[in-house]
Length: 105
Image 1: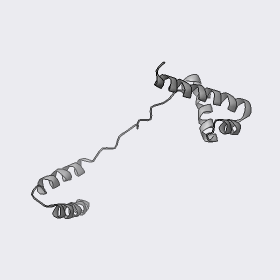
Image 2: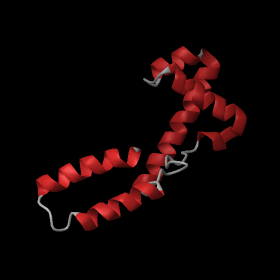
Image 3: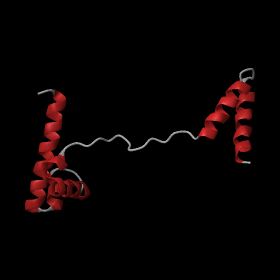
Image 4: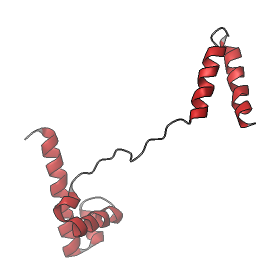
């Protein structure tokens, strides 16, 4: 078994043992024994009761949606890039500052 596979299996086994301790001796006792919070123990107990062993598996932590820039901001950025190609850094920062306030009007 690869290291990652062993790690995933180890987490799964730990969660299963934690759930059994919580059911036998209570949430607080399981939290103390596994050095975690009662909230975390309740989460795993709930998932185990609702989904069985599948509920103890790792889930994706990727965001469900990704924020993107609005169309207006992108257009303003492209305009500033063209306008500032011949300017120095001080002029660019002042121009960007004023352009931000001009968009609000």
